[in-house]
Image 1 (cartoon, one colour):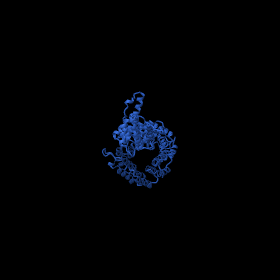
Image 2 (image 1 turned 180 degrees about the horizontal axis):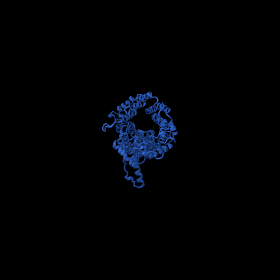
Image 3 (image 1 turned 180 degrees about the vertical axis):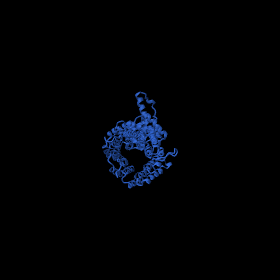
Image 4 (image 1 turned 90 degrees about the vertical axis):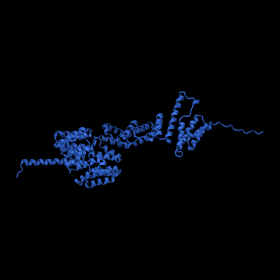
Length: 563
């Protein structure tokens, strides 16, 4: 019996639809496997041939996942033009806005998608929830309402509409893991969601990896490793598991093992530039700076990502190619918005300004910003202060300490001491006096008293020079300087065993003061004391020679002549 024209046409149409669905599923499978080149080709081919709203959305979703929101936006807009009633393209447009921090605009688009779908499309809810979970600013409450339903508003969630959708279960778990509220049991909540995913598909590598993420967050790398390896065991073909294992080993400081797993991941990739870029990133984290630089160098001109300049600058700093490092990092900073900069950008920029000798104040400014953005990097102040101090750049060392103190909620006595010492050595005696007074006011220490006295002595010497120049000095009216009493206070509280060299110095300074007052007896007494604590103290030895020369000579007794 012959088939009718309509029977043949219907069969052809169903076969065509099945083929189209298969092509999209194939592209999304490649995307999940991080074979981005194959994913783009499959989804691009489908969209080029069919020009459907769904094809536009899925290709746009690919571009979102590969951090190309501008390309994604073009496709979502085309999708809306093709079919204004297809809700996912509104979700896509909303996510582009959300990534661009236009939260109000994003929510309007999300609401449009929910309205069109009458809140009965689980994928619409899932994709909106992804924005709230994975992008900034995070809104976990809104994500959970979309995934689990909003009982107050009597609205169902994606979980109710698609209880067997594994991606809904996994994203649900990720939402709890992101919120991470111990009082609400979010660790357990996340684990339950991932177990739900394993109930849907016991061979889901993604679910085991997510369970491992809970342990990884708790820094229990052994337990995380067990779950990650279980993921590979149940599905050896899930290539991202090898990359994540590499990352885990790297985080635990086991870089050799991490690189081995990352290389396994690269073998399973399709050689796309996004994967190459991630490999370059990983090598940098694993401290393989030369390898990272070479991998990323091959992507220049092929990959339009400002982050490429960032990573190359980091590598160049570590490889001591400071001039090019500064050029690349300044290029990166010039291409991105200020809110996209992270603490390490400021840190490297500060270091590069410093080693290039370009602008020390800019170096301090950027190091300060790095510590401000990430308070765990407060140690950078100390490191930079030491660098300035060792390089005898005391003026800048003082600026570093002043900046550090201005940012600290409770500066320590050591902070003020470091600042005061740097100011003194930079010959800013007046300000040093104020700062050292503050340090001694917090707690009197031998070190604080010593530096206070030393700074006072320098101020007095400056005044004496000025007075001599202005002819204001009168020997008859000369009085003991105020620093004398402070040096004597130091000797009262100094540790006679530990601080011998400094005590010797202070006795020498007191001897000098007595010498300026023409008190030869006291000068000799203090000079001898100085040599008791440091017999090799050159200045005190020289002073003793001078004292001997100044002593009146006793006439030699002549032997009477014999008659």
